[in-house]
Image 1 (cartoon, rainbow, N blue to C red):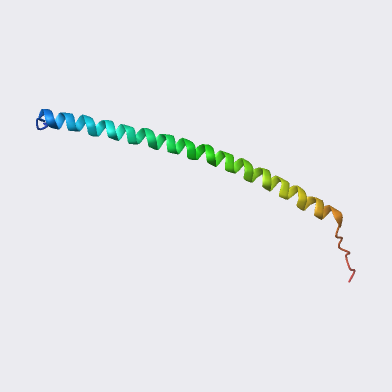
Image 2: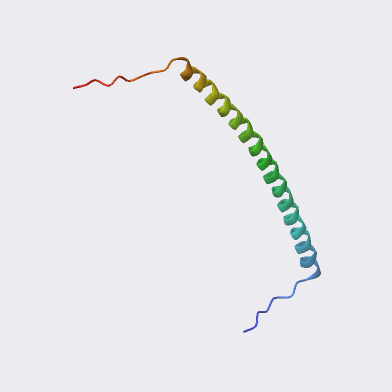
Length: 75
């Protein structure tokens, strides 16, 4: 079984080349956007983790101020 294709005119070839270049340009821009988003995500996650670590530290300081104890009652 053979695959055959219709012939293209010179105008169609030029238009196809133009469209393929535009598609590659879009792909390049998408890659740039994805890279920028990933970089921003890393920055936001870093900030978020720093804030969570500080929050946990402060919570532990508050907990350490007053200890609770449970006395067992004998029945």
